[in-house]
Image (cartoon, rainbow, N blue to C red; front, side, top):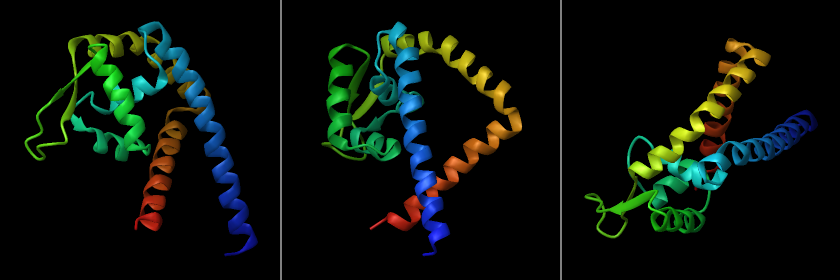
Length: 148
């Protein structure tokens, strides 16, 4: 690996770490009026379209199964989600949003839409789309080179 490649890796990692902190702070602000935390919103968002097992949510989000399990249990306790049988795996139940969970997510939508519009105004729609695609490609590349 050349010194230049190492520098690019360091710059990329530091940029992503900073972005992660920025997104977490913004997410906390957006989620608070809905009575959620950023972590709860993240897990609810993972099952917004289709129920998933805790391990599947963890893989999708790049976080540990244990942390997802803890959050999922809290969401179920607060009636924002429920566990349901998983036809593919008897012990790994699926997490599904309840109507209350969907309502909480819908309360985030106005702030989410405003933030998206503000970012699009600063970046421009094409650059915003390229940014998302670049981050998706970077994540896939890391998956490719770090899979066991």
